[in-house]
Image 1 (tube, rainbow, N blue to C red):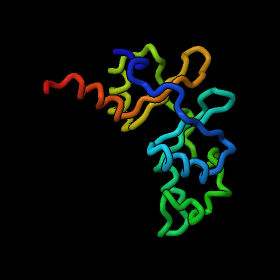
Image 2 (cartoon, helix red, strand yellow):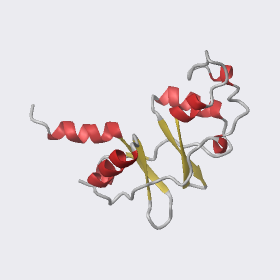
Image 3 (cartoon, one colour):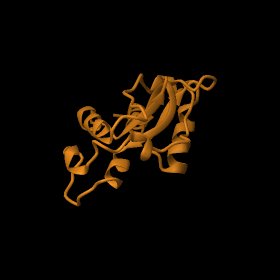
Image 4 (cartoon, rainbow, N blue to C red):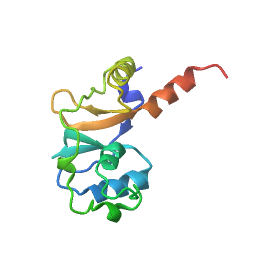
Length: 137
């Protein structure tokens, strides 16, 4: 089975100049934990709910209350992970599983291997769905 068979195609993305409040709103609205960061469609990073939690201001701030965190003034580029590991759409799903185990990733972006354009994302939930389909009922 290939990555293109299980990935979420055209995932929601953010730009480096977006605010953490924008990311918090998207994570909450979409009920996801990771969002790829792009520049002109090219994958340049990833930002996660953990990145936001690590940048909380008061101890009582919550993910669904971005104003309590002063996230309106912090930019994605200041906290995103760059140099992101990605896979191509033609990669075997076993490669994704190996990367998830080795690096403790819970999502891996899918980018065109030649152009670097983001094409999708594979999360651990996507991998579990594949496993679930393989299990006997």
